[in-house]
Image (cartoon, rainbow, N blue to C red):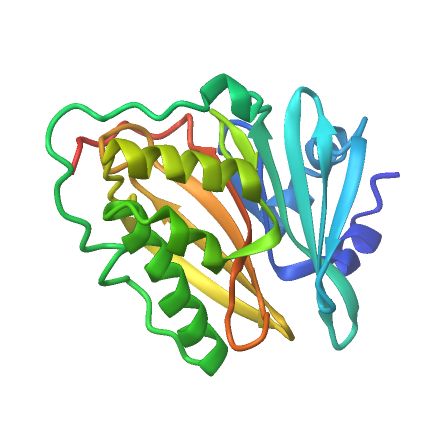
Length: 246
């Protein structure tokens, strides 16, 4: 209905909308382009949710893309904090066999050992510590340990593939068996936001082996004494200039 006032009341102050081409808009920019936001959010199919108390991921498909909207509980009510589209990924089976990259594996300082972010809460510190273990397990292949830091309802997707936990662990085992090292893509900037038993990470990366930067949304959930990752979705910025390999 083009009601900017009503829409504004449902968008979080930290709201970000990233379309399938990686064009990102904050709340003010999205409201100025409300017609495009409305059009982008039409025709949802196969809608599902992953609910974590004060954070809810609503996801499905529209316009040939995977979409996710992350809602968070604020004192004034539920608000959308991210609206993200990713090119519809291929089934995991289509890219199930890892291939060794050309050239040496190289180092993994950022994000394996250092990050351009200083956590301010105990939850954020725990999340980053556990997440960096997974990056080390990818750099020095350790599929058995990697799977212990991932939630049972885990999903990971980019413009190449989409995998659940079992599929991603199987892929890690094949990397492990082949001795394929995968240094993490360096982070340019990141933020973490706490919502009860869930932590939302927004990060911007440059590909380790060169290419266009991308935007990544991750969700971590409290489980016992740990914070396994439950969601990872990335969208490439098609408007960006490719960067050289690290």
